[in-house]
Image 1: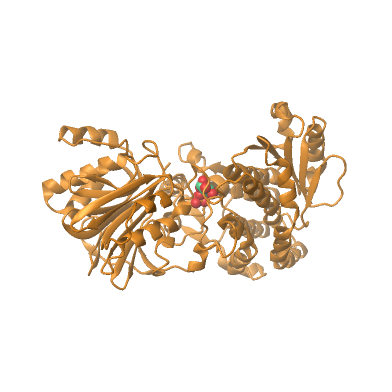
Image 2: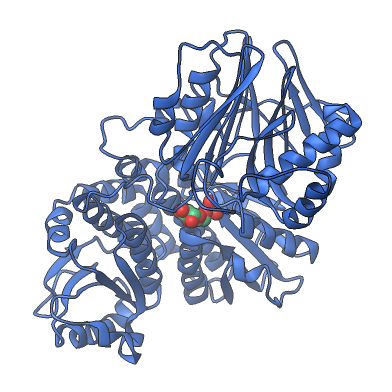
Length: 600
Ligand code: G6P
């Protein structure tokens, strides 16, 4: 979603710093971009629909400026165009905003009555006018921002500059914002990649905090405008995570990083002994049921975990999409554990679900990638995946890293409930050691491009699977539609004939997944039903023998069900990637999508 970058510095490199920062945030997803910068005591604003490249063409990089704010906008209120793009200026105040102001219509009326006129359809322009109005009244910008924060409902990270005031201000509530300092230069940004070129040290703002950055000082205030200190954070990843390193796309680079990522994640929590699981994962003894709540691919990892925990550990699991969970009547008790999963740690619906559980005094566990993110900070216990910075909008390595932690949780629960014996545990340990090599071989498999050639021009592609393979189908199908724009749906294999099989015609691609022996023959029967109607069947399975029911067969190694999904996903990711590449799609930045969904 929207990305914010702000700069103040003696080096007067505002334009290039803002642009390079916005480029580093491109992964968040956006459809217009803009910048406001101080130019000889005047604030110039330039905005463009489309990519940052369009904006760059309008900028004169020879201009020396010491103060600027920039923005990439993912349209919510009003279409993507220059007028709605940020920054917005009202009176003496110019702002960029990430989030949603829920009460903007009511505020708009009040401000119109005070004489403000609005050009855009955005909620942001209203917030800007409100701060200007309060500033005119109170003559104190900090007080104006503080008062505005009480009147604005919803979520916001705001970067603010004011005419004739050589300062940068920012405030956040339920939207991410970091602050960084490097020698004589200071920055605000929505996420760490924007500042990595300069420093890997940063500060996190708490909800309601206000920060004032000048050439010489950095001052944090709480919402009562008392000066406060913030602890410096160090970003663990490195600047290389922001580079493609020879790969055509970040997505491909991140797919290739998976063997290392799962090794790093698993090794962090598990040394092959049950003791390490006891020590490094939370105590799970008391829980009799689990709720898993997440969005998108993170929800799909939850579905995998649900199957593993229910089937093997024997514990009931409810897995729910966060945007549903937050508003529904939920039945839990003091033996319930709510697990929220989120790569970014900022997904609005997942955060709201976490807060709902906490308000009801239910124990919460978060599985998160981004250190210090809202979900990570608010959950009772947080387990970090070790995926590093993920740039491609379509998640791959974070998904697999989430799977790896969830597998460890499932194994731990199975041990607690005495559902697996020592021999199986030892086999899993051996297989985990070999997992990165198996993943690498699968990544290097040469079949994907040839198979993609046969299906990339089709309009509909279906995925089939039962139980855990159905959960994998859902992620495979999501990957494909996200980046290739092909209509794709995943079905529980037995469900297809209750309607959707009517869509199967000559050469309709069906990607079928079979890794679970128990239901293998059932899924094969369903595949045959599609084949009899002309389908082109691509089978992803962990067994060798196959006959007339499939046209292409990708064989993956057969390993314990606890860890099998980390292999099953590889062909699905790479098929989607190859199809999107053949179609010439913008793989790392698919249209309309945002990586970090900070609004509901
Ligand atoms: C967006 C992303 C997905 C991600 C989902 C949940 O839709 O494009 O890749 O799975 O949000 O995000 P989270 O950060 O909570 O995992």
